[in-house]
Image (tube, rainbow, N blue to C red; front, side, top):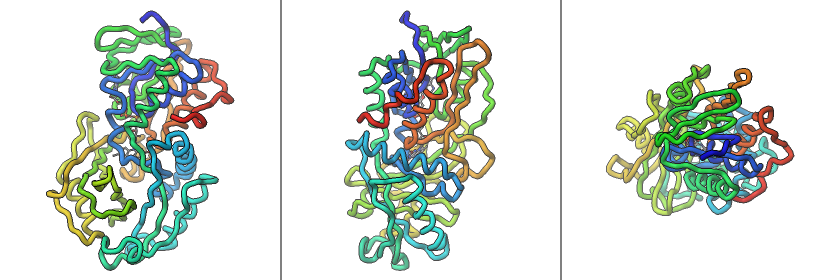
Length: 383
Ligand SMILES: Cc1cc2nc3c(=O)[nH]c(=O)nc-3n(C[C@H](O)[C@H](O)[C@H](O)COP(=O)(O)OP(=O)(O)OC[C@H]3O[C@@H](n4cnc5c(N)ncnc54)[C@H](O)[C@@H]3O)c2cc1C
């Protein structure tokens, strides 16, 4: 390939996919390189929600929740064929969060994102609306809505659209070296192809620092914490198309979500790991998830009920807090180093905020390639 790209993105997860879609729609010459197939890593191992992140309000992450709620509306509009609004019920548990706190959280959740087409929260009678599912002590609950999404498909749709708009998409090729020259990067793939790009974006998710030190050969000034999250899948625990948000005594919450018509998706956990490779659920995580469900549900489940499981790694920005309190927000690390070609490392992020993240990436690169804020387009055009 002799052409010089404006931007080359390492990593075909949701963040890389969103960036190449946005950039190709602005007539930039872009290339995405993914070592496996697009959307095959963290972006398909999620809880599959486009959500505001009700729980993050407890960590005072108002910026993130506001942006996520706004994005929930946008994604509902642009990806209506792969998203479904779904009610979540938080059973009231006297010994845990007080009613006033949950109601305050839901009031903020209903309002800080601005005008919403998704139904507002309400208090419900669990015994009447979801009879014979939860133990007798759970009589009332708080209902709010979020969106369920086909996470992998969301990545694929972004990539397909980018391709239609002229982006070069290379799958099953690993970036093994990136040499930084004045104004240009020489990027080597594992079949020895060399690509040239004016700007390099490292969107390798949990591999970000590995790519930075082994491929780009620069030191990172940001450290990340790799936190594994696992889900188990059982046959449907009940027939209604409603999900539960279950509070645990350790202050964490887990979800029980109807999944693919006949299953329940239960997750997630938070376990620190030291490698992004091949995450797998371990027994203590299965026990944790089973126990959480068994504290609430009449029907008791055991490991025999687990038909499948999957795990993913959250690349969280290290801020030396316990895993559930570390921010789920994203940070850009723009390395400009004089006249040398720029590098942008993307830390953190959520499926929910990928579109806005991509838009912000391009605006951040404005100094290096002409980007007009007025030409931002991805919030309007359907996937
Ligand atoms: C358990 C769990 C549950 C979650 N639930 C939700 C949720 O419900 N809602 C939500 O909004 N967010 C959720 N998230 C967060 C969300 O899934 C992630 O933030 C998002 O998927 C990260 O996308 P990414 O593009 O950064 O990373 P990835 O999807 O991991 O993509 C990075 C890609 O880089 C590729 N790569 C790495 N090195 C190279 C190389 N050298 N050359 C070429 N390619 C390379 C990898 O193969 C990979 O495909 C969850 C995360 C986890 C772990």
